[in-house]
Image 1 (cartoon, rainbow, N blue to C red):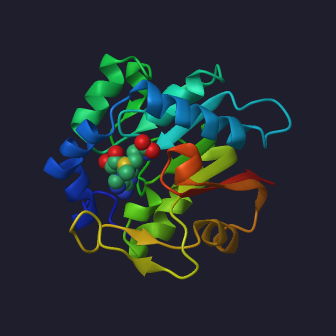
Image 2 (cartoon, protein in one colour; image 1 turned 90 degrees about the horizontal axis):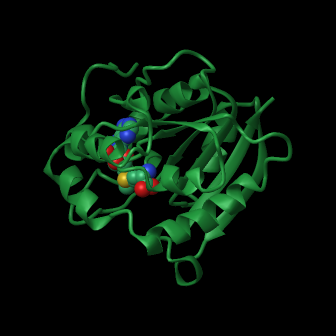
Image 3 (cartoon, rainbow, N blue to C red; image 1 turned 90 degrees about the vertical axis):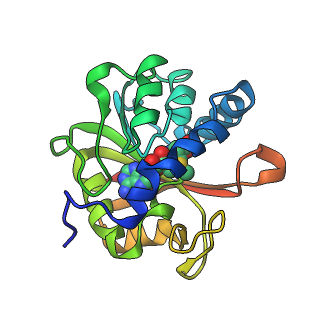
Length: 212
Ligand SMILES: C[S@@+](CC[C@H](N)C(=O)[O-])C[C@H]1O[C@@H](n2cnc3c(N)ncnc32)[C@H](O)[C@@H]1O
């Protein structure tokens, strides 16, 4: 079992200087927002009924996805983020209400069971050590009452890829398959690939699931 109060080396990396420098490289500029709006329009198109009324991003950083979702959804937005500087920017820019900017990690989400209608990650499961992946997904599954979205790097086989010169910081796999194999109550509503040359996003694969 993961000790929810103990930081892994991967988490220390994101809470510290590497995480702070990442913020500067990934600012909320118009080009980035436009690419994310197009991505979320595709993902949310898979929802046939009412749109979710509450959405949690796990590992939101400064909220570039939530900013995009605000343009198409009136949902109450929640952001969970371990890096303190990123949480400060979320609040300064009013991406979420103060009580909705949560300090925490995917393996320990400070929300009640089924307290949001949709929970998602984008470029976050890839940074969780494989030993901690299932407990983290259990937490995401626990807090979502209906939808789970996952936007990550895909690989047929689990593999570690050096990330900006560091080992053990990026782990690719078939995350959609991982969700379906471990959570049989999930039904896939849609999946897609965000080809870098056409979207400006980084060859990301997305899945949208509904809890049955
Ligand atoms: C590559 S960034 C992606 C940020 C954002 N999701 C996006 O798409 O712009 C990864 C983010 O996940 C956060 N993070 C890393 N490990 C995490 C964990 N175990 N639980 C929650 N967030 C985590 C980092 O602090 C960072 O903000």
